[in-house]
Image 1: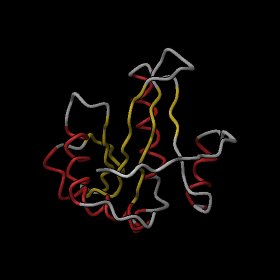
Image 2 (image 1 turned 90 degrees about the vertical axis):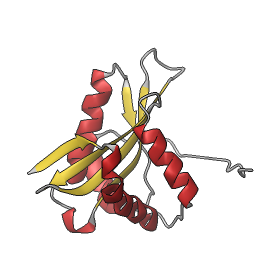
Image 3 (image 1 turned 90 degrees about the horizontal axis):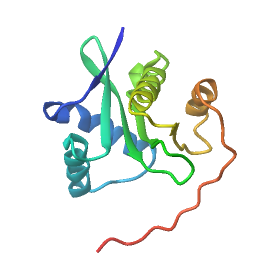
Image 4 (image 1 turned 120 degrees about the vertical axis):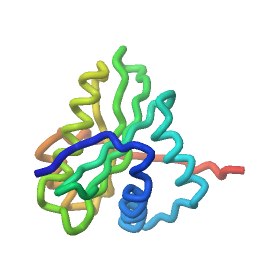
Length: 149
């Protein structure tokens, strides 16, 4: 059975390997300072950033991090599901689906009008799930990376 919980500060040591696994999957290396600041924000009730975890038999096997933000298209906030990761040995057991549903339910409870997310176009396993729980938008992401000083 999968249980979804809001992570608390004492979960950091369990969260970190999943966060690092997410980075390996996307072939990025987020520095320790940014990781520390991310965790601080996720734990700060004044921040619009949140983290939920999926427990299976009491072990953290998945995480989802999401952000509420305003939109010019609606009066309700949007929930941006920024990071979703399931431990490799827990994949195919409904962990990702449960985490997405938990974000959807939280967003609904907060009065948000949309939950959305991105994935790489070659992430076929995730896309197969996403097509079952959400609608594709047809949009393509563009970005400009700005160096941090």
